[in-house]
Image (cartoon, rainbow, N blue to C red; front, side):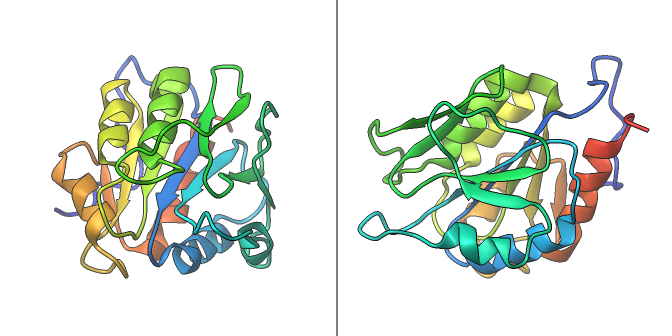
Length: 206
């Protein structure tokens, strides 16, 4: 599959502007997220929510690691906090991350989904339900197939879906599973994803 043009032609039901970006990664994800966030730059007009599969047996310094490369604030998500524009929120180890229509984040210890917690599927499904066509969902490198069901939910609600090109991803499982659903709008090398995301969320805001 080839990449679509940088900004899709939305129909009359398209949103005036996007409101949230959700990103999922697993194996190889720390590097991929570092590249993505560095390229995304500062001042993004929407929040970014991230599910990265982490070892639940240990504490994590992922927020500190990613903050070294990101121009935006990066933090582990807190239960019942409101997601703010220009801030990156990461699901803590062993907690599902969900978001409501009011932008309030919820952390859950409910059962594993496809053997993982946090689950990209649950994040994407909550984003789809809360934001519909105003959501952007991205699947980066990772083994397994977490996120594939979730992006179908995003797409079914009119959102926009991006996957890292499996041919260039460090681990192909998650992006390939996403592409195989047929619900992906853009299949891109890692280095191009941030440019497309920023183009999407800044469209119609000027």
